[in-house]
Amino acid sequence: MAFNQIKVFPMTQWLSVYSLGKARWDIIAGITLASFVLPESMAYASLAGVPSQYGIYCCIAGCLFFALFTQSRQVAVGPTSAISLMVGTTVAVMSGGNLERWAAIASLTAFAVFLFCLTAYFLKLSSLVNFISENILLGFKAGAALTIGVTQLPKLFGVEGGGHNFFERITILVSHLPETHTNILWFGLAALALLIAGNHFLPGRPVSLVVVIVSIAVVSFFPESFNQLHLTGEIPSGLPSVGRPSLRMVDVDGILGLAMGIFLMGYIETMAVARTFAEKNGYSVDPRQELLSLGAANFGAAFFSGYPVSGGMSQSTVNDKAGARTPMALLICSATLCILLLFFTGLLRNLPEVILAVVVLDAVSGLIKVKELKIVYRLDRREFYIAMLAVVAVLVFGILKGVLLTAVASLLLIIARTSSPAVVLLGRVPGTLQYSDIERHPDNESIAHTKIIRVESSIFYFNQQFVFDRISDLVGKDNGTRLLVLDLSASPMVDVSGSAMLTKLQQWLNERNIDLRIVNALSHVRELLRKRGLENAVGHISRRVSIQQTIDDYFESPANS
Image (cartoon, rainbow, N blue to C red; front, side, top):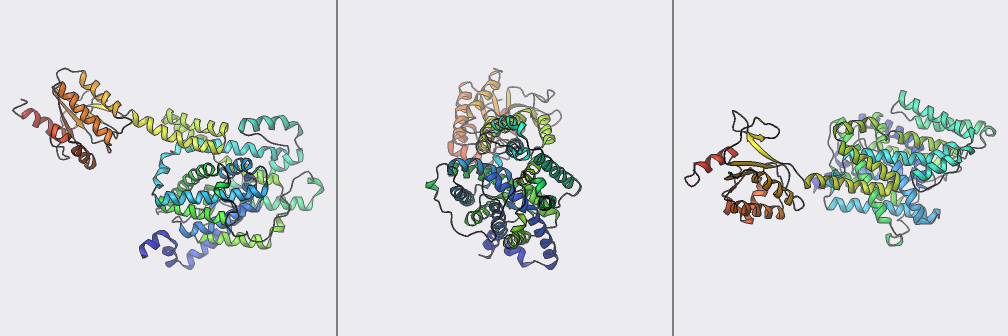
């Protein structure tokens, strides 16, 4: 029981050895993190279409509940740019423009994400995240960054925006450029320059908070000079109200599709960040446990007037560089944000909205990783084109449909690669008893009257016909073949259809007076083939008998000599 408690609540383990030394670093990290996520979360809330304080609510609840379950010591959760835009663009349609219903649907979405996380946890589906490759995620992030960026550019230029996808928004923005408010543009560009310079020379510091403070001070002392700026206005003081979402999932059409897209993207992002900092700091994280952590964070967001959250690289980097030793830093961050909401919201009244847009633009610029895309292009053109497909899908169809199409593209890429696996003819390496691909190594020796073939993939229902056709082609090229040795060392899985194909292959070979022997099959593959009855036809299937011994035993037999 104690083991299970520690496994589900890792905090019981790190709290038992907590020390004043760790507390010192966690307090510094928590306060630093709060100062960083305050302006960032407010900016993301504007992307989601809800008042600025809702972003702060997300950070308070997300960090609090995530800390109770996570194994990661540095990951910080909260609203992210991509999730915020997914919520904003999709919930806008669902709510019909009603702000109260908008906020209620956003909270309900967080609860639906919690349910997906919990279901995946109990069904042990954490490995499903591996079906979406990092390379496809590169393309998706680049498309998301461009989409998010174009939603913020109208605020930078001080003009009206609009449109349903990237290209419509660009067209509308260009048409309104003659109406640009010069004061707003220069104010925003100056803030952006400060952010870029600060992040370059002071990495890991809450530069965005400094920019926010400076902008508020400038507007407060020189109101006449900046009267064209749209301000955030009054932010309600006090903590978020606690209560279950006011709507049910049956009340909102399309909520499950939105939640599924956010779940996929949020979990992938959270695990990528968790693994990065676990490797850097010398510990490990359990992907299944982080499902529970992410679910808890979204449960908290749903019951604290928030919207879906996930782990983010920027805030986690700040948390790590500030010296976070344990998830206690997240609890300190939540407490700090609560204090700000209770006593200091009046200071944010004169925050210009263009500053929030600038914070978002600076944050998403790091999502476009041109150097990494160039590396993928050089290594594998096919994966690069799939990554570009992810970019286009996001730009044309939006972030929600883009992430779902990206997931489908990942699965299709896997199926495409395994549906036509390599089936190679082997030859003996000169001077040895080892065998390798004779096409790659033409100096390998062929064995008289024998074909040795290796299937370099699992054999499933969707590739079994390809494997059969490829083997029959290789065998059919030589009428003098008397023995086929099938090496299954590179076939970790064979399903029922695959075993049926091997039975069919044995019969096809028997009709041509060719004997089949199977070598190097793994344990569960051997068991399935034995249940199929194939061992009765081809002889004992053993992991101890090599290719060379199989050939020697066959031709030394009086019946085959």
